Length: 462
Ligand SMILES: Nc1nc2c(c(=O)[nH]1)N(C=O)[C@@H](CNc1ccc(C(=O)N[C@@H](CCC(=O)O)C(=O)O)cc1)CN2
Ligand SMILES: Nc1nc2c(ncn2[C@@H]2O[C@H](COP(=O)(O)OP(=O)(O)OP(=O)(O)O)[C@@H](O)[C@H]2O)c(=O)[nH]1
Ligand SMILES: [Mg+2]
Image (cartoon, rainbow, N blue to C red; front, top):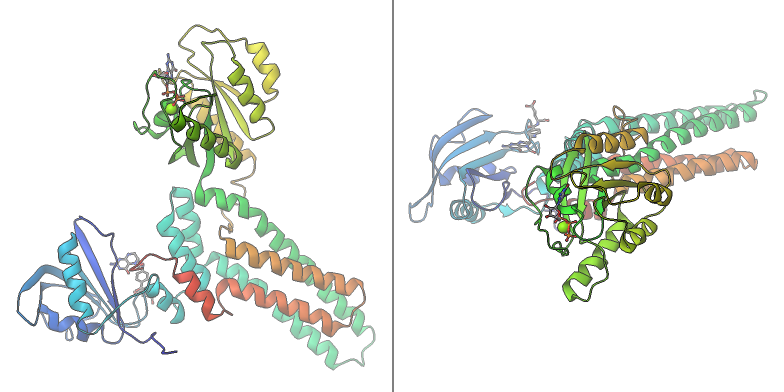
């Protein structure tokens, strides 16, 4: 296979569409010699590094001006990729941006693959693998909290922890080697297995602790999936709109207004929620509504939290009772809405049906009860310990979870081997396996296929 890691690459690094400014990023040995002949202004090969330079991009063949631009020149190695980087800042818009990209591509650069700039940052040693993954998490972050988690990972907090684990394993393996080389001392075998046992137990506990953060990490990254459930017309879409401070979902007094599931991200009292407004659940012969109802049932199954809305201005209906039954045992909060209207519901009966679940009274129309609802959500969230590790490292990535799980198992094998009295050199193998698995998280050991697969999920231009 031809190695293309030395090519000079180019891509549009800003979203495609109308905007104030667009950036075409060029990286590689020839970045300057590719862009310079297209630039009318200062001689870019002569300007100081890390300067931005005003001028025009021209087509050298017909001398037509493509756009008025600012060009940043950043020479290796202090750049994002550690290669020479040139960034052309042009007017935002499809035409100018594509024109310039085309010119760059026909004058010596090739189109970058998705994530290729960041891949080079990794290959050239500026980032490790978990930091490169954090770059993508940053871009995808939907809440402040998930941005913070990704930022910590980009800063190397996870990498440092993993490196420490690996160093500990190396130290113990080195000690074991020394012991094996000097078998004349008494009880050396005893000491060696004691050493291995202590370290394996200690690391196993650390890794188990990390794996515990994974669920929390997922919530912080993706938001707590919160399904708003209830029969038609109870005020589900009104609740979504109120929490969002935006008229996102259609609200009418017609039962069956919402037909499809609507998802929106919102922060409630510091809790990142992925709110899911659903179609009111009832029996219906309407084809479209039927599908919506089916999707609502699906949303119940996958939700982390269920907000069950009930209209307290009406008696509990059979549909309400069905929904109470359907959501029984799930993480659920009951919201009694329309408290601005006279009460027609039998509260004692409801309490009997929902047991110990939190019940919150609201009038979404009058914005009352919203603070209580926010407080109840954050109380529930933080009391479940979601925030407990908030200054520590959080695991958010499926690849990391899988590798940590395997490493934890390898350490379990170390302990089992010691208990079964296996020879130390066999136990060492499991210890080394744990060391290798941890190394895959930071990319200290990796395979090319992994890199291709990982970076191909990135955005173009990143
Ligand atoms: N125009 C522009 N804005 C951008 C980026 C970019 O590439 N271009 N970034 C891209 O994602 C982010 C900033 N991240 C960056 C991270 C490291 C380096 C860098 O040059 N690092 C060098 C030297 C740092 C220094 O001068 O001290 C290094 O670490 O060796 C640049 C950008 C967000 N904003
Ligand atoms: N009086 C009163 N009316 C409310 C309150 N909350 C919502 N409504 C009204 O109830 C009606 C239904 O509200 P929606 O938010 O569309 O109800 P929904 O549960 O999303 O209904 P479907 O999408 O049909 O399942 C609208 O006319 C709202 O204005 C409230 O607290 N008090
Ligand atoms: Mg609705």
